[in-house]
Figure 1 (cartoon, rainbow, N blue to C red):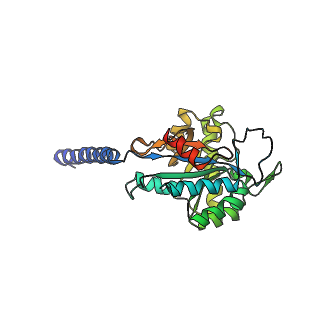
Figure 2 (cartoon, one colour):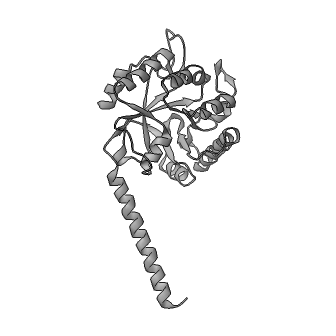
Length: 262
């Protein structure tokens, strides 16, 4: 290859890089100034106990969840999935003016027993972050989802299944490679039972992360990382820094909307 061709090739590469940066910057600027609340639920119980060691922060009732969903829909919210958010981020679809995302952590059987029928009733979506080592088990009297439950919900098109680790420990206290290997193993199990996952999202147990864990997961194929409290804005959305609002027991839909708008 002569010198002239090398110069032309280098120029073409530089132009391509500049254009890529320009379009990426333009796409970012075109993102609407829209709030994206991501709600976090956990286990569901039919009857609220008189006392709770976690101050009722990690249990809800089916009736309360249905009231939340109805209130969101009646107030003009569109319940979207993480895939919808990813498609909007990549310019493949338009984000609704009032989006909201429902997530559930840990993979309790109650998500299938109580939440899934409500999702079907209102034709709305949710994302469940499972602890893969607990799937199909009953631990301390608490039953977890089976792989068949997960597959049925995923096939409905209403439920996405993502990773919440294999063991649910504080990964900010461990070497980064342990988190990396753990997330890989969790998705290996998910794909073994549920098929290839085009979108991979990870919710940190206890929200415990470090800058190194974030960089490592980003470099190892995780599309979204979830680990903080608050409300996201689409215009400045960072896929490696997704915030959520934890929904304690009996928090009403109106209270949640007030929290979003505060």
